[in-house]
Image (cartoon, rainbow, N blue to C red):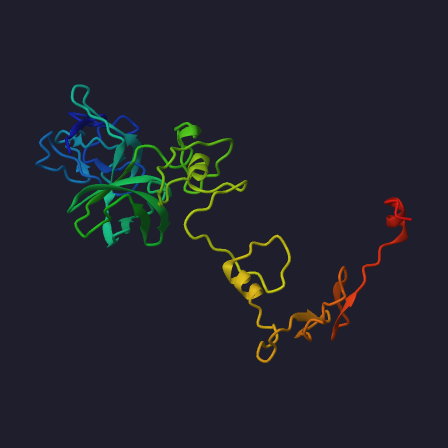
Length: 328
């Protein structure tokens, strides 16, 4: 990571007390912005030699070496030789107009590996490592990214996150965090995604190809193209349905099992020894009737039964029908 000159105390700065006295032997402590975590500075842009922390001023109240920093923001705390704090200067960036580069990632803190999806950092860093904030980290396999699920502080700050792909391993160093905060973000609301988004209006999405069976959103066009409608559906293959109970007489679908059970009902009486007879019923049970009565001399009559025996009966035509036809 390249270094830039600090925008405060960077080169040859001379400091004084509030009374205007040279701050001989004064001290400058350097921290990561917004924290009490020590942050390194260097004596030049090569980043070979680090300044001590604190940087002790000489007898003239000047910094003994230049102060070079990373592109991350810093916090500077100035104290006198007796460790009395004279001033705190937070969120101070480095300055280098000709070569400064900007990133959507803010340099993070040294992380301690816990698991592939969790790490800890010193101090209370929950304000930095916020829920839903994006993080960037480098491990053995390269640089990867994730989204924070929880951030809690005990003796250290423990962060649990969901990696986009590869998680952490023991080689992890600093974990950088997204430039924009996850709370009160400056991103327009129309672009903000939530882990549990409640969609309103008429949201749209790309229509998946036929046969897709993934977690992709199913649009109404996908459903209409891949599933039969309720009106006049054309079934193919071997569709199935629940089998109705015997005797069911509704609009429920009749399966082949229902038809077979109804057409070949085991309640039919035994056929053995009943040659030439026919089935009759008394309204509750089926039985074999006696043989047909003789047909001789019974022209125009119809067969009737009293529930046990059959006989021929004469058709009785009501008088009003005979009258209507001019017979009487």
